[in-house]
Length: 239
Figure 1: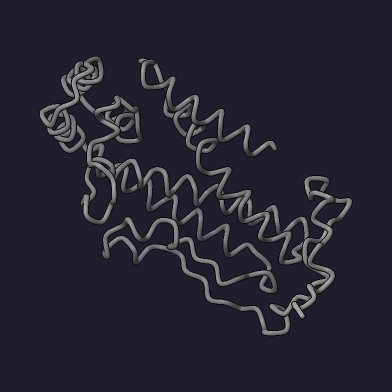
Figure 2: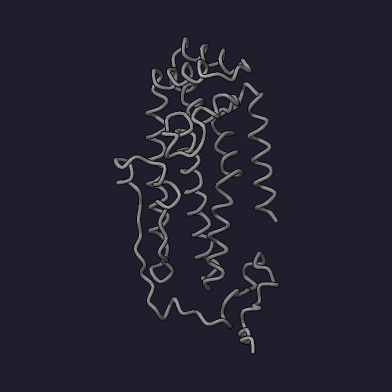
């Protein structure tokens, strides 16, 4: 499928960027869109199809998912350097040791001074994998203001996510929360900015009959014809 190809393409970009010096922030954002965001978007779009949403509503959910995936990945970059290992669940500094050019790296390139940029180039030119490298690079992220700038970018991304979610028609709003993707890795202080939506669908709306599950319309050829439901015929109970 298109989404599977995009995810593989994004992963290859991620690996290629580790050894490339001239990686722009636009290339980075496209990489994380392909690697992470499109998968979130398509997962929500599939859920919309199953829930009998219109093609327009399904596309809105896809767009929402892409924005959510971007916000999640930017926050994940930040937490890789500054997160609590107990909460984060991964080795802190892993991206630094692998010379991955995350949002923090790009913020240094954008707002850091010459000395900070040269120091960062030096560490990213080495293949050393030790705590000294992690500490030195994190200090550059802090002194340059890159750590603060990346968190502002996350908060701005969350506002875009909230705006997209509010654009969904009321009848199609589900118990969906972008906090599910980002909040577990954010501080309590930052969670206050996350958009949360309450379920606005009635019990009748949620009670979709089996014959209406997995709809297919000519308007969206991406809906697989095989989805026309095995669920339409109730399974017989074992005798």
